[in-house]
Structure formats: C-alpha cells, structure tokens
Image 1 (spheres, rainbow, N blue to C red):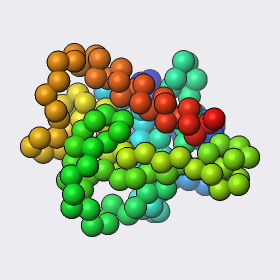
Image 2: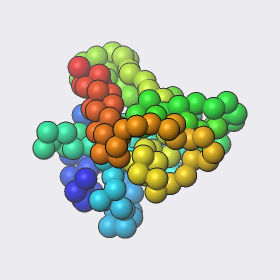
Image 3: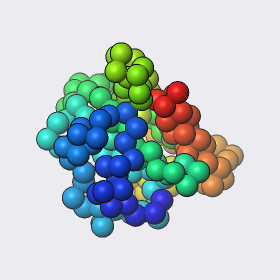
Image 4: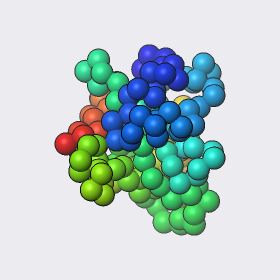
Length: 163
C-alpha cells in the first residue's frame, strides 16, 4: 500500500458523514507505518476504544470505513479466526460492525465480520507479527496467494458495506 496523508484518509470514508470523518482520530504515526507490508491501513481509536477504522486501495480507488467493536480489554477467552487473513487468536479477534454506506446505513443497517482486534492482518500474513502457537494454519499457498486472499476478503467486506 502506498503511504497516505491525513487528508487522503478523511476523504476516503464511505460510511460516515464528512463531519464525522473530519472529527475522527487519524494515527499520528503515519510516516512510521510499514507501508510496504500493509494491504490496508487499520487502527483503533485510542480516545474511543469501541471505534476502529480501515482504509484500503481497491482498483486505484481509496475506500475507508468506520467500524464499531468491543473495547480491547473485553474478556475473550475462546480461540477465533479472523475472516480476513485466517489467523487464529485467543482473544485477538473481534466482531467489527460497519454501518452500511448511504441510505441503508442511515436506516441502521450494518455489516459485520470477525477481524483481528489490532487490524494487523497484513503483518500476521507476512509473519511480521506473531499471534502465538497455532495462529497460522499450515497451507500450501504461497505468500503472494495468502496476501491476495486477504485483499480479496477485505474487498468483499468493503463491497458489502457499500452495496
């Protein structure tokens, strides 16, 4: 993924108002992110722990979505699998819910997916972050195929939000 500026992030949101996008907390460490290893930019809002955000570039177009999720400290003891990168975690996967874009979202419709709580799917797939013993299933896919699958899963989720 190419590095993003704060303005590029704010203008990419598809499921919140311009005012909400203007007020949300964008990470201050954008320059320090490992952009070459990211398939999407994801972060949790430190001032609103039940909010997370995801920005992805699909077909040359940036799309960002706002998500609701349980607070990071919420007790989760069972092992779950992220539907984006297929990494399993004990307590490291959360149901994240995105309001649908447009009129459907204004009417309260939403879409949910189980996603790595820290939104670091790209780093887990590449082995740059460790989710513990048994976190990655043994697969015959190449790294590029695993990355493509993750990107496709994120794209499918974004498509549901914008449908």
